[in-house]
Image (cartoon, rainbow, N blue to C red):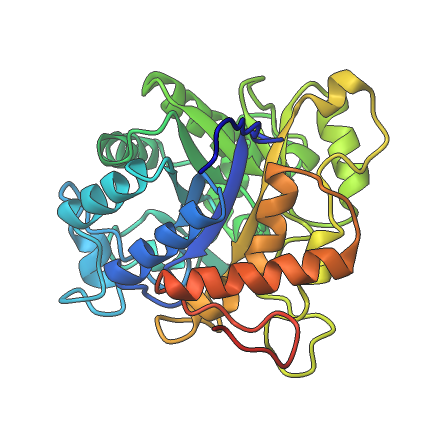
Length: 369
């Protein structure tokens, strides 16, 4: 019997996230729900759902059903309906987890092209179209009407106060090859192709603002000089994180760190298991030169499980317990005694397995009683 006790605990950061990617490989609803169960066990509270990308468009839109009919791997099964999304969002809510959807534009949109003709840019070789399509055409006013309607539908299903707009890895070559776009730039006194990216993102910010929602973007929207609203949350993923975090926060923007928590990158682990967790544990969102005011602008971070090489057969094993290292650094900072961490992580893996999560061995030979 315990006569008297007191537990003192609380999160170090308010945003403790995990990204899943359902475009490269479709993840069935039960797998996503099991991922959420594991997140709850690891005190993570934000599921960043990268739901669509170049490879497929599994979101089943009622306003634009052709997007998934033409863009999903299999529109008869590999899609997420309204009911699927509502069930996932509610399943997450009951576990204290927010669901933030990402619909990345203007790049990473190849799968959108079949469903909505003229949405994407026609690429040219010389004076003739070459049959290729590039990013969303930022000069076509009708595209913003479509995007506003689509995003209005999306926020009805995802009630979170944030919507991830992407904004990363925008390929400019197709835009610059298109004579109609070059004419538009000349008419509007645009001197750099990046001005088109700024135009598109500013219009997207306007749309999101009209929908009473705030935005998250990948760091390129910041580093390429897009005029971001001060409410924008910037996710750092590329390059030297300490420099980027310093730049973003010195400009007064709130930041998330993901650079060192890419779970699709396997490190010093010859057997492809969970043994590279140490590199994730050594990462810290506040490890950058900045003032206390700047560091208060870092809201936390996200571990990212991109989907090129994971599907329903192995995604849970790839994520856990490697994401547990990031989860602990986002919840607390107990120190760098790796032997102690390794022992606790071993115990936590067994705990997750008892809860039905097929976590990989973190430290080589071991067993769970």
